[in-house]
Image (cartoon, rainbow, N blue to C red; front, side, top):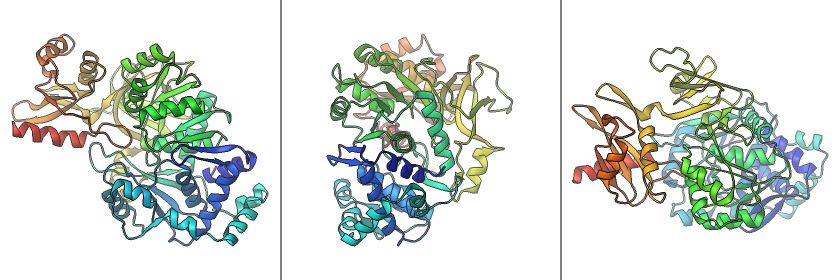
Length: 506
């Protein structure tokens, strides 16, 4: 199934239903209007060069319609991260994918203090340039029967690239991931089956569309089923989002632990009364966060696991099958195995190894990067680069990136494990992470990063009861705020650089 064609079918079926409750721009957009807007933009976008078109827009009705219009025109959206270094990200995306046009808005550039760049086209100007005749023609086309309407927009096949998304870049330069219609549709089918989603659900859509979690959960799943999405551009505006959830009677929320932590702190009892599914992904969900939602709102925060390369879902917990601490069981149609990272042998239940994934959700490959694609895809299996184990019942337990394991004095040490122990010993308002610095004798030393001063001796004493000496932090570094990527993940690249600068000054 082609995703934009499925949207057309749904839009014709639910013409008068609210498709987008836009809390960014304070607009209500019906499925009929969303279809009309997409057709109008599709006609204009056909004037662009074939191939890729950059899209740099915050979550809103116009962002959704621009993505749909790009696909209907036969172009492929390249989603650009505007949250950190918009100008450099535009240049990086254009250099990598060799395209000219970037669709954005003047208001976003002003807010970001991002200069106008050659090839940028502004939606404000595009919409003003649409003539009365253009609108009449689009209205006539939108009124066509579904079969005729589908023939008037781009067709193609399921293995065509649906969009380009960039990996988070939390550890090194981002890679351009090619996700196909088949990839996203496979996730859509599995998620609908797992959570019994219906057209009556209302989905909070505040995860950025330049991130795979936002694309699948906040756009394609709801729009392929006929839900209403409630868009809001800033997932860090925690208090406002709690108000939105209560006022719009949202039933489904997907987010990262960073976002959910903010919602928990800023919410009042009753704010989440309408919510039936709360799904956390992208980073490990702390026990304290799960406990907090259960105590304050009587809501179960479910944990899932995925990657950009897998569209994203790989495993998830459901209300019926939930094992807190695990990242759940493989979704329908997906196989998961773990293999020894040194020998390549299949791991036994409970034995930690590299996580490999196979299924229709696995990407086509990295664009223009045959070497990295070959390293990541082997005989249909995608090597996630993550470590974990499957228990006897088939639940997957994620223990961190392979790159977040290090050898100290010949012993393998998990930085994720150290973070987990430290986090449980700190007050909820203090964030923490653990990084490594090179050491001539041991190979590496561990540095704990916290957002407020702590009683280091007392914390180390308590940590020593749960960890071996080689896993205890060598030093504690205090920073006022934990750097985050737009996806909500911790920006380890920035933290590593900052820690080394601080230690050098000392």
